Image (cartoon, rainbow, N blue to C red; front, side, top):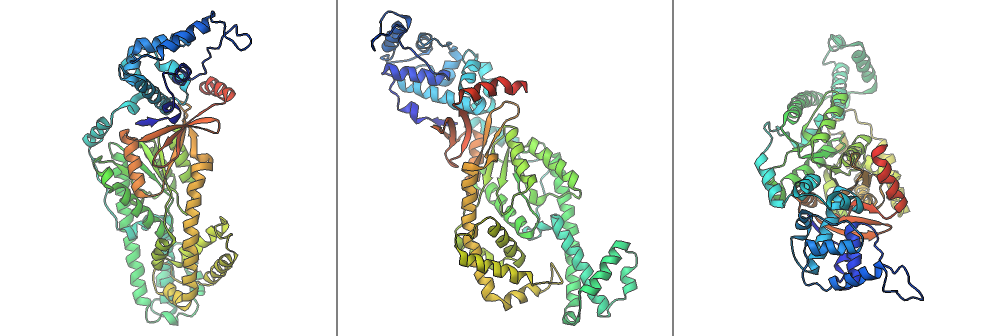
Length: 540
């Protein structure tokens, strides 16, 4: 890891006051060498503080620093000394004032990552032998080359998952099965009304509930004449989709078994998917991240939810809970809508002290508009309703009205089939102007909406900072706006090449990550909160 702290960089260790301030930064508490007998603004020159201050002034002009000289300075400011191993680890044995400042910054960065409190970290580590220091700091202390070698030697999962066509991955969701079943009932109802099949033959062997739904559908389909020429083709398409769903779900079940039996898991991808477009966008994103050149050499094993299937929602919850526990970090997709399950996965990861990278798409309206040429009416209508509810159209009353009109128009569309047929295309052709205008409004609102979501998660969202349940360290979300940045953050976090700056703002020290510009750790200045938190947290 690389750390910078401007406040320390600006210090001049040849200035005694600056040197004391630097030592204060190292020890994690204010240091005061004010004269005890000061009178009329003049120091007495005789008390212990005055004597120590004069010696500090001499030390400040030292050309080189080593462990002995640092310990002398620490004793002069009434602080515990450090071990030679502590000095070697953070200050690289010997050097001048710049090395002294560099070592303090390195220690403070590690203190924020591992302990979340400067004073506690100093008291915990200052006297430590090399083996103790390395045990306490763990993987954070490992060099990037070590981490890369670690992942490359692990290799890929012993049971590789099987790929599934991206356009069919939504068959792994529960909604697709419902649409397929409804289309099958509709096809049977039309075949019955058109005299192609007898009602008793269709109902034979079916459950009372299935018969009830079928008879209801016979009434709902109304006049079947418009499907006279196409019903055989539609029926074949329904059967093919039903067979495809069964085939895809079997493959998804095998993939779930592969994940469950894999010897390791590095990255968990948290997403909420119900509709086809959600599966497709998630699949494209996962592929873009893990095929990025920056990440390929690590051979990371990731859980791709667009390839996994479970027939039981309770089993699904247990499976995902296990994946979260095993993964080293979570890649969280901030989508059109966020769910309780996905938000709990974010919070659970942070509470385990593991990193979370939140992906918030950044796309210009033109890009969104081009993608919408093949969008489904159901998707655009649903998103416009959500964008309206989020206030994304409030700044333009005219567009707000047009969006409301389109939503009302779309609500009049009542197709008989959900997955097959040309009903949607026919409807959109007859309302091409309104459809084009709705896509334009949607594209602008969607782009602005995700920018707002990124700002909220970066600055305001309460989930963006969670306490690691074991250590009490405040753990923050890193927000990325592109798949490329997600890949760079994964590499940085897993191989210890992240760039962090230590900044003081709003009553706290913040460890800010460079790519995301998000706070990864925080240390509060509030003495009451600090004392209460670290005194009571472990005893709760």
